[in-house]
Amino acid sequence: MAQLRIGSRGSQLALWQANHISSLLQRQGHSVSIEIIKTTGDKITDVALAKVGTKGMFTKEIEEALSAGRVDLAVHSLKDLPTELPNGFVLAAVPRRDDPRDTFLSVRYSQIGELPKRARVGTSSLRRQAQLHALRSDLEIIPLRGNVDTRLRKLQSGAFDAIILAAAGVTRLGLTDAVRQYFEPAQMCPAAGQGALAIETRANDAATIEAVKFLDHPPTRVAVACERATLNQLGGGCQVPIGAYASPTQRGLLLRAVVASPDGSSMIREESEGSDPEKLGVEVGRALLARGAQKILDEVYGREVSVPQQP
Image (cartoon, rainbow, N blue to C red; front, side, top):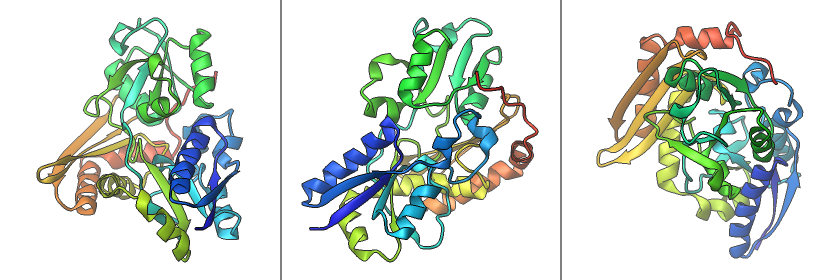
């Protein structure tokens, strides 16, 4: 069996994900090592992610290591992976997806409706910020960077009344006891690919592609392909206020998508059902654009929105 080298970010969650894939590969008889690679997103920690504005901020340096042959595969959170991979790379496997929802964590309050006016809520995501404002326009949304442990410490220290995290990350780290509320996708639409992992390899590395093939979960791949088609149609990266979530139905997939202004004042939602994932994703993306999504996105890309300073 092969000796496989995994490239991963160094956060606790990224390493959990890399070790999880490593364990599955080892069960197949492979020898596996993990190389920690610091990405642009890891280096820039004092600026809200929405202001960094770099596609691939959590993947570029890992892809450079792949290209140089230092590692054989990369394990990413799929929502961090740009919708179009650079030439020479392929999405070799998409493992079974974990919970795609967002969660509400608080020391004092059991759900978002209990928060007092002007409560301080931490999130690193413009998508979450926009949908929180739509749910509760009176909240003060504060950019929150750092790994999951850092964010929880800030919550427990009283710096925030609540924070919003992805359910999958909280579950992977065994921290579900801290969750007070799960947001259903109709209430807070997840990011495209949220809860899923991505196994990226060199396109010409047939041996590694074959070695990771067993990790691929076709229903997850189909759903996230649909979501990423919408994101691609909108020209969005992982840090813009776009949500897209596809769930299985008897007819194929039901796709829900949203584009929102960061202050929650404009919220454009679309949903549609279909059997062709990519076609469905493109159609929903086009429908959002036809209803005015481009104006919202132009403002975000032009940095005309007000993003609070990092506390």
